Image (cartoon, rainbow, N blue to C red):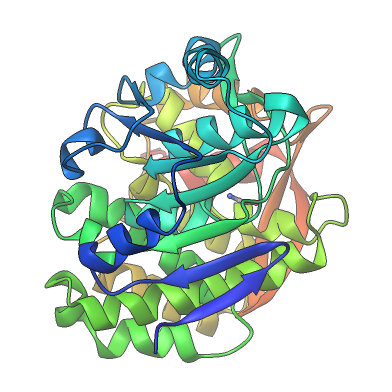
Length: 349
Ligand code: GLY
Protein backbone atom coordinates (compact mmCIF):
# COMPACT_ATOMS: atom_id res chain seq x y z
CA UNK A 1 0.00 0.00 0.00
CA UNK A 2 1.51 3.34 -1.06
CA UNK A 3 1.73 6.13 1.49
CA UNK A 4 -0.54 9.13 0.92
CA UNK A 5 -2.04 12.04 2.83
CA UNK A 6 -3.89 15.31 2.20
CA UNK A 7 -2.51 18.76 2.94
CA UNK A 8 -4.63 21.89 2.31
CA UNK A 9 -6.29 20.79 -0.97
CA UNK A 10 -3.35 18.68 -2.07
CA UNK A 11 -3.25 14.88 -2.33
CA UNK A 12 0.29 13.75 -1.66
CA UNK A 13 0.96 10.33 -3.15
CA UNK A 14 4.10 8.22 -2.80
CA UNK A 15 4.90 5.88 -5.69
CA UNK A 16 7.56 3.17 -5.44
CA UNK A 17 9.43 3.63 -8.70
CA UNK A 18 9.49 5.09 -12.21
CA UNK A 19 7.15 2.37 -13.48
CA UNK A 20 4.43 3.35 -11.04
CA UNK A 21 5.07 6.99 -11.84
CA UNK A 22 4.54 6.50 -15.57
CA UNK A 23 1.36 4.48 -14.90
CA UNK A 24 0.14 7.40 -12.80
CA UNK A 25 0.94 9.92 -15.57
CA UNK A 26 -0.81 7.69 -18.15
CA UNK A 27 -3.93 7.71 -15.98
CA UNK A 28 -4.27 11.48 -16.67
CA UNK A 29 -5.26 10.82 -20.31
CA UNK A 30 -4.10 13.46 -22.79
CA UNK A 31 -5.26 16.76 -21.33
CA UNK A 32 -2.01 17.92 -19.73
CA UNK A 33 1.01 20.14 -20.26
CA UNK A 34 4.28 18.53 -19.16
CA UNK A 35 6.90 21.00 -17.90
CA UNK A 36 10.54 19.99 -17.45
CA UNK A 37 13.92 21.67 -17.59
CA UNK A 38 16.97 20.70 -19.66
CA UNK A 39 18.12 18.31 -16.91
CA UNK A 40 14.88 16.57 -16.05
CA UNK A 41 13.88 16.29 -19.73
CA UNK A 42 16.55 13.57 -19.95
CA UNK A 43 14.92 11.55 -17.15
CA UNK A 44 11.70 10.86 -19.10
CA UNK A 45 11.74 8.99 -22.39
CA UNK A 46 9.73 9.57 -24.49
CA UNK A 47 8.85 13.02 -23.22
CA UNK A 48 5.04 13.30 -23.01
CA UNK A 49 3.48 15.80 -25.47
CA UNK A 50 2.69 18.67 -25.31
CA UNK A 51 5.63 19.77 -23.22
CA UNK A 52 7.78 22.76 -22.35
CA UNK A 53 11.52 22.44 -21.77
CA UNK A 54 12.81 25.30 -19.63
CA UNK A 55 16.44 26.30 -19.19
CA UNK A 56 17.85 24.93 -15.94
CA UNK A 57 18.73 26.97 -12.88
CA UNK A 58 17.71 29.89 -10.70
CA UNK A 59 18.83 32.36 -13.43
CA UNK A 60 15.85 31.22 -15.47
CA UNK A 61 13.31 31.55 -12.67
CA UNK A 62 11.93 34.58 -14.46
CA UNK A 63 8.99 36.00 -16.34
CA UNK A 64 10.32 34.72 -19.67
CA UNK A 65 9.98 31.15 -18.49
CA UNK A 66 6.43 31.87 -17.34
CA UNK A 67 5.62 33.28 -20.80
CA UNK A 68 7.13 30.18 -22.40
CA UNK A 69 4.79 27.91 -20.42
CA UNK A 70 1.73 30.10 -20.98
CA UNK A 71 2.43 30.46 -24.73
CA UNK A 72 2.59 26.70 -25.13
CA UNK A 73 -0.67 26.34 -23.19
CA UNK A 74 -2.38 28.98 -25.37
CA UNK A 75 -0.97 27.62 -28.66
CA UNK A 76 -2.35 24.17 -27.81
CA UNK A 77 -5.75 25.65 -26.88
CA UNK A 78 -5.53 24.10 -23.42
CA UNK A 79 -8.30 24.70 -20.93
CA UNK A 80 -8.90 25.21 -17.25
CA UNK A 81 -9.31 21.42 -17.02
CA UNK A 82 -5.77 20.89 -18.32
CA UNK A 83 -3.34 19.49 -15.76
CA UNK A 84 -0.08 21.42 -15.68
CA UNK A 85 2.48 18.80 -14.63
CA UNK A 86 5.83 19.99 -13.27
CA UNK A 87 8.61 17.42 -13.36
CA UNK A 88 11.70 18.95 -11.79
CA UNK A 89 13.24 20.72 -8.82
CA UNK A 90 11.97 23.77 -6.95
CA UNK A 91 12.42 26.17 -9.85
CA UNK A 92 10.37 24.06 -12.29
CA UNK A 93 7.72 23.44 -9.62
CA UNK A 94 7.40 27.13 -8.63
CA UNK A 95 7.27 28.35 -12.26
CA UNK A 96 4.76 25.73 -13.40
CA UNK A 97 2.59 26.35 -10.36
CA UNK A 98 2.54 30.11 -11.00
CA UNK A 99 1.71 29.63 -14.69
CA UNK A 100 -1.04 27.19 -13.74
CA UNK A 101 -2.44 29.65 -11.19
CA UNK A 102 -2.94 32.38 -13.81
CA UNK A 103 -3.84 30.36 -16.93
CA UNK A 104 -7.55 30.96 -17.49
CA UNK A 105 -7.68 32.05 -13.82
CA UNK A 106 -6.43 28.70 -12.64
CA UNK A 107 -5.81 25.33 -14.29
CA UNK A 108 -5.18 21.99 -12.62
CA UNK A 109 -1.75 21.32 -11.14
CA UNK A 110 0.36 18.24 -10.38
CA UNK A 111 3.87 18.60 -8.99
CA UNK A 112 6.43 15.80 -9.35
CA UNK A 113 9.45 17.12 -7.43
CA UNK A 114 12.70 15.43 -8.47
CA UNK A 115 15.10 16.70 -5.79
CA UNK A 116 15.05 16.06 -2.06
CA UNK A 117 14.82 19.81 -1.45
CA UNK A 118 11.76 20.27 -3.65
CA UNK A 119 10.12 17.12 -2.23
CA UNK A 120 10.31 18.33 1.35
CA UNK A 121 9.78 22.04 0.68
CA UNK A 122 8.57 23.56 -2.62
CA UNK A 123 6.07 20.83 -3.41
CA UNK A 124 3.84 21.50 -0.43
CA UNK A 125 2.13 24.67 0.74
CA UNK A 126 1.18 26.41 -2.48
CA UNK A 127 3.96 29.00 -2.73
CA UNK A 128 4.49 29.75 -6.43
CA UNK A 129 6.47 32.45 -8.16
CA UNK A 130 9.49 33.80 -9.92
CA UNK A 131 12.37 36.21 -9.34
CA UNK A 132 11.87 39.80 -10.45
CA UNK A 133 13.87 43.04 -10.27
CA UNK A 134 16.77 41.17 -8.62
CA UNK A 135 14.51 39.93 -5.82
CA UNK A 136 13.96 36.24 -5.22
CA UNK A 137 10.30 35.18 -5.55
CA UNK A 138 9.12 38.81 -5.66
CA UNK A 139 6.12 37.88 -7.81
CA UNK A 140 4.00 34.91 -6.86
CA UNK A 141 0.73 33.50 -5.66
CA UNK A 142 -0.54 30.92 -3.22
CA UNK A 143 -1.83 28.03 -5.31
CA UNK A 144 -1.61 24.59 -3.66
CA UNK A 145 -1.25 21.77 -6.18
CA UNK A 146 -4.11 19.33 -6.64
CA UNK A 147 -1.61 16.51 -6.45
CA UNK A 148 2.02 15.98 -5.45
CA UNK A 149 3.68 12.75 -6.49
CA UNK A 150 6.79 11.65 -4.62
CA UNK A 151 8.93 9.16 -6.51
CA UNK A 152 12.18 8.57 -4.57
CA UNK A 153 13.70 6.84 -7.63
CA UNK A 154 14.41 10.36 -8.92
CA UNK A 155 16.80 10.88 -5.97
CA UNK A 156 19.20 8.13 -6.98
CA UNK A 157 20.93 10.25 -9.63
CA UNK A 158 21.18 13.44 -7.54
CA UNK A 159 24.66 14.80 -6.87
CA UNK A 160 25.86 14.51 -3.26
CA UNK A 161 25.73 18.29 -2.95
CA UNK A 162 22.14 18.47 -4.19
CA UNK A 163 21.17 15.64 -1.85
CA UNK A 164 22.74 17.46 1.12
CA UNK A 165 20.88 20.59 0.04
CA UNK A 166 17.59 18.83 0.78
CA UNK A 167 18.87 17.08 3.87
CA UNK A 168 19.40 20.45 5.58
CA UNK A 169 15.66 21.18 5.25
CA UNK A 170 14.83 17.73 6.63
CA UNK A 171 17.04 18.43 9.67
CA UNK A 172 15.35 21.81 10.06
CA UNK A 173 11.95 20.09 10.03
CA UNK A 174 13.17 17.68 12.72
CA UNK A 175 13.92 20.65 15.00
CA UNK A 176 10.51 22.19 14.32
CA UNK A 177 8.66 18.93 14.94
CA UNK A 178 6.67 18.53 18.15
CA UNK A 179 7.68 14.87 18.36
CA UNK A 180 10.89 12.88 18.00
CA UNK A 181 9.95 10.63 15.05
CA UNK A 182 11.83 12.51 12.35
CA UNK A 183 14.81 13.22 14.63
CA UNK A 184 15.10 9.53 15.55
CA UNK A 185 14.71 8.40 11.92
CA UNK A 186 17.63 10.69 11.06
CA UNK A 187 20.00 9.66 13.83
CA UNK A 188 19.23 5.94 13.57
CA UNK A 189 19.64 5.70 9.80
CA UNK A 190 22.58 7.87 8.78
CA UNK A 191 24.24 5.17 6.66
CA UNK A 192 21.02 4.19 4.90
CA UNK A 193 20.24 7.84 4.21
CA UNK A 194 23.63 8.47 2.60
CA UNK A 195 23.28 5.18 0.66
CA UNK A 196 19.89 6.56 -0.50
CA UNK A 197 17.97 3.51 0.61
CA UNK A 198 14.53 4.05 -0.94
CA UNK A 199 12.48 2.84 2.00
CA UNK A 200 14.38 5.04 4.44
CA UNK A 201 14.10 8.06 2.13
CA UNK A 202 10.37 7.48 1.75
CA UNK A 203 9.96 7.53 5.53
CA UNK A 204 12.18 10.61 5.88
CA UNK A 205 10.25 12.54 3.23
CA UNK A 206 6.89 11.46 4.63
CA UNK A 207 7.75 12.57 8.18
CA UNK A 208 9.32 15.78 6.92
CA UNK A 209 6.19 16.66 4.94
CA UNK A 210 4.05 15.92 8.01
CA UNK A 211 5.99 18.57 9.90
CA UNK A 212 5.63 21.09 7.08
CA UNK A 213 1.93 20.26 6.84
CA UNK A 214 1.49 20.99 10.53
CA UNK A 215 2.62 24.60 9.99
CA UNK A 216 0.94 25.34 6.66
CA UNK A 217 -2.41 23.86 7.63
CA UNK A 218 -2.55 26.23 10.63
CA UNK A 219 -1.37 29.24 8.62
CA UNK A 220 -1.80 28.61 4.86
CA UNK A 221 -0.99 32.17 3.75
CA UNK A 222 1.65 33.04 6.34
CA UNK A 223 -0.55 35.64 8.02
CA UNK A 224 -0.62 34.24 11.56
CA UNK A 225 3.06 34.15 12.53
CA UNK A 226 3.02 30.35 12.43
CA UNK A 227 4.18 29.37 8.94
CA UNK A 228 7.12 31.77 9.38
CA UNK A 229 8.73 29.12 11.61
CA UNK A 230 9.62 27.25 8.42
CA UNK A 231 12.07 30.09 7.72
CA UNK A 232 14.30 28.89 10.57
CA UNK A 233 17.91 29.47 9.48
CA UNK A 234 16.84 31.15 6.24
CA UNK A 235 17.43 34.80 7.12
CA UNK A 236 21.03 34.23 8.23
CA UNK A 237 21.53 31.64 5.48
CA UNK A 238 20.09 33.59 2.59
CA UNK A 239 22.27 36.60 3.44
CA UNK A 240 25.29 34.26 3.35
CA UNK A 241 24.24 32.94 -0.06
CA UNK A 242 23.88 36.41 -1.55
CA UNK A 243 27.01 37.68 0.21
CA UNK A 244 29.00 34.85 -1.43
CA UNK A 245 27.18 35.35 -4.79
CA UNK A 246 25.60 31.88 -4.67
CA UNK A 247 28.97 30.30 -5.39
CA UNK A 248 30.54 28.99 -2.19
CA UNK A 249 27.49 27.72 -0.31
CA UNK A 250 24.54 25.68 -1.54
CA UNK A 251 21.14 26.78 -0.26
CA UNK A 252 20.94 23.85 2.16
CA UNK A 253 24.42 24.35 3.57
CA UNK A 254 23.74 28.06 4.04
CA UNK A 255 20.43 27.28 5.79
CA UNK A 256 22.17 24.75 8.05
CA UNK A 257 24.73 27.43 8.95
CA UNK A 258 21.82 29.83 9.52
CA UNK A 259 20.20 27.37 11.92
CA UNK A 260 23.48 27.36 13.83
CA UNK A 261 23.46 31.15 14.05
CA UNK A 262 19.80 31.20 15.14
CA UNK A 263 20.53 28.67 17.88
CA UNK A 264 23.52 30.66 19.09
CA UNK A 265 21.47 33.87 19.06
CA UNK A 266 18.77 32.12 21.09
CA UNK A 267 21.30 30.98 23.68
CA UNK A 268 22.74 34.50 23.98
CA UNK A 269 19.25 35.92 24.51
CA UNK A 270 18.40 33.27 27.11
CA UNK A 271 15.69 31.85 24.82
CA UNK A 272 17.34 28.58 23.75
CA UNK A 273 18.50 26.18 26.44
CA UNK A 274 22.22 25.27 26.20
CA UNK A 275 21.27 21.55 26.34
CA UNK A 276 19.04 21.89 23.28
CA UNK A 277 21.73 23.93 21.49
CA UNK A 278 24.26 21.17 22.20
CA UNK A 279 21.94 18.53 20.69
CA UNK A 280 21.27 20.58 17.55
CA UNK A 281 24.98 21.19 17.07
CA UNK A 282 25.63 17.47 17.36
CA UNK A 283 22.87 16.59 14.86
CA UNK A 284 24.09 18.94 12.13
CA UNK A 285 27.72 17.99 12.61
CA UNK A 286 26.74 14.30 12.50
CA UNK A 287 25.41 14.99 8.99
CA UNK A 288 28.63 16.82 8.03
CA UNK A 289 27.31 20.37 7.98
CA UNK A 290 29.73 23.25 8.64
CA UNK A 291 27.75 24.53 11.59
CA UNK A 292 30.23 26.85 13.26
CA UNK A 293 31.80 28.72 10.35
CA UNK A 294 32.54 32.40 10.97
CA UNK A 295 32.89 35.30 8.52
CA UNK A 296 35.92 37.58 8.52
CA UNK A 297 35.31 40.93 10.15
CA UNK A 298 35.97 42.64 6.79
CA UNK A 299 32.90 40.87 5.39
CA UNK A 300 30.48 42.39 7.89
CA UNK A 301 29.50 45.47 5.88
CA UNK A 302 28.35 43.49 2.86
CA UNK A 303 26.75 40.74 4.98
CA UNK A 304 24.71 43.42 6.78
CA UNK A 305 23.57 44.91 3.45
CA UNK A 306 22.41 41.45 2.33
CA UNK A 307 20.51 40.97 5.59
CA UNK A 308 18.73 44.29 5.14
CA UNK A 309 17.54 43.21 1.71
CA UNK A 310 15.64 40.40 3.39
CA UNK A 311 11.95 40.84 2.76
CA UNK A 312 11.12 40.02 6.37
CA UNK A 313 12.79 43.20 7.65
CA UNK A 314 10.80 45.60 9.74
CA UNK A 315 12.46 49.06 9.58
CA UNK A 316 16.03 48.39 10.66
CA UNK A 317 15.09 45.36 12.73
CA UNK A 318 14.91 41.89 11.27
CA UNK A 319 12.62 39.15 12.49
CA UNK A 320 14.44 35.89 13.16
CA UNK A 321 12.99 32.50 13.95
CA UNK A 322 14.53 31.31 17.23
CA UNK A 323 13.90 28.08 19.11
CA UNK A 324 13.25 27.66 22.82
CA UNK A 325 13.49 23.90 22.34
CA UNK A 326 12.27 21.27 19.92
CA UNK A 327 9.05 22.35 18.15
CA UNK A 328 8.88 25.52 20.23
CA UNK A 329 9.72 28.64 18.24
CA UNK A 330 9.52 32.41 18.70
CA UNK A 331 9.81 35.25 16.19
CA UNK A 332 12.20 37.80 17.56
CA UNK A 333 13.80 41.07 16.47
CA UNK A 334 17.53 40.88 16.99
CA UNK A 335 19.81 43.91 17.03
CA UNK A 336 22.82 44.13 14.77
CA UNK A 337 25.44 43.98 17.54
CA UNK A 338 24.21 40.52 18.50
CA UNK A 339 24.01 39.37 14.87
CA UNK A 340 27.58 40.56 14.39
CA UNK A 341 28.61 38.59 17.44
CA UNK A 342 27.24 35.30 16.13
CA UNK A 343 28.35 35.55 12.49
CA UNK A 344 31.87 37.01 12.76
CA UNK A 345 35.17 35.62 13.93
CA UNK A 346 36.06 36.94 17.36
CA UNK A 347 38.32 40.04 17.40
CA UNK A 348 41.89 39.21 18.36
CA UNK A 349 42.27 42.30 20.54
N1 GLY B 1 9.53 27.36 2.35
C1 GLY B 1 8.79 27.81 3.44
C2 GLY B 1 7.32 27.79 3.22
O1 GLY B 1 6.85 27.10 2.35
O2 GLY B 1 6.62 28.48 3.89
